[in-house]
Image (cartoon, rainbow, N blue to C red):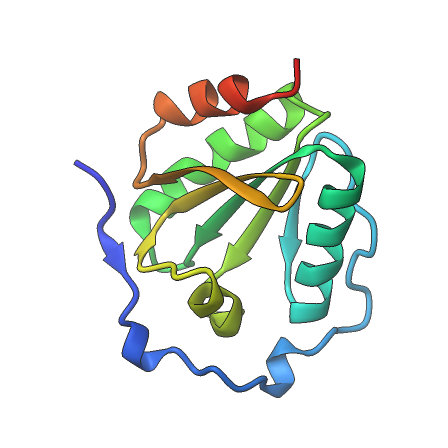
Length: 142
């Protein structure tokens, strides 16, 4: 089992492109109980900063639209966001934000990264639908 889609790190572009810039209507604040899709590097940075300042657990889903296992995990990730409104759930499409995927050394999708106050505390690579909720509960503030 595990993940099917892989990112060829050689194809990731380190330079910022026009599509990495903020778009009109980008959400500035995270909504509790919802998955926040980051569509620009600035929005990504803002959401991470907000998560760090709030001291909330941050769970990031690095995904791709063409990735079957990612599509299978998307509704599970959304349900977790509803179940745990005190956790910040972020979604990053690795093709849309290539620089972010490269900076975080994402090589396979889906990859779920767990942060507390800006520090990586756990990582789950692959479509492990039973393990994801367990890891969220494990790292939730008591």
